[in-house]
Length: 309
Image 1 (cartoon, one colour):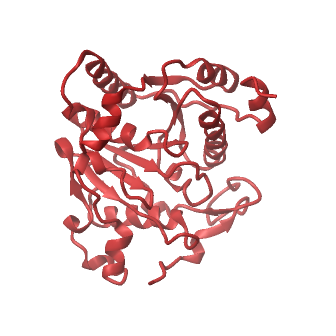
Image 2: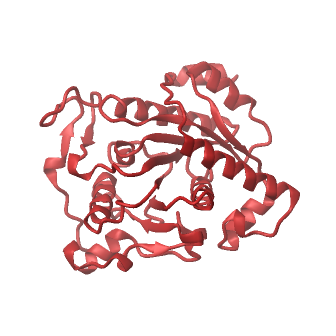
Image 3: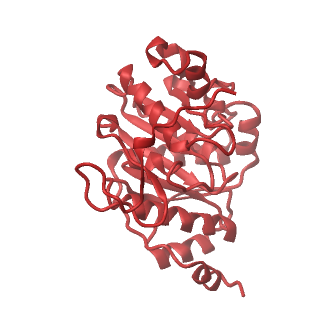
């Protein structure tokens, strides 16, 4: 198996300032730093995080569809080796950027736009970054190469919205890399302890990144939940707020099986309400949300807060 090349100069200990930089992102780990030339400057950028299996890809894809229905030019970037983020938009598993780069021995100049960008529902542009082989490489490198490729082909010049759909539960220096590009991080959670515990870890990662990058928490998206009492309790304690609440509807589950966004599913009163909620969320995000600065909790504090002994 061909090994993905890693640029060692991109990686510095957290706390070590790079050229022209102030304090680092924190202490005790390695951090992949953003090349200033690779900043996304012409679009509103959102990074979607949350516990694995919580519905980030479904949320991201339907949010992308909603933005497109507002007339925005949208690019969704999947950041998971499963490369299924854009599945409901494109109706298939598209090749990843890393797969395509390997085919040309990482000579990106040999690639055409159509080799790695696929048009999805209502004109949403779809890219799957992929990931390094298990146990090797760095997810941050993969994200960086994807953005570099998009900039080389000028695909970000006329894009209004970029959505990074990020691998669940991984907030190491590598898979926190989309936070370096994002204006707002959106956290998808359910009304249960494990989802909220993961959300707390994600908050800590965003706190670290916000020291040197413009990213701030945009808010919480409650998903697959009839109630939100636990989420509300956590929000009150940490300084978060809920942007949208999507119920656990069977139609949402079936949309994934049918390779379809919710906007392509047969109409029903319940589903139409969810579609309207996605449209309202897209409009709210486009108008601009307050950048939140929540304080993450210690593990024991979460147990105490949510009633566990």
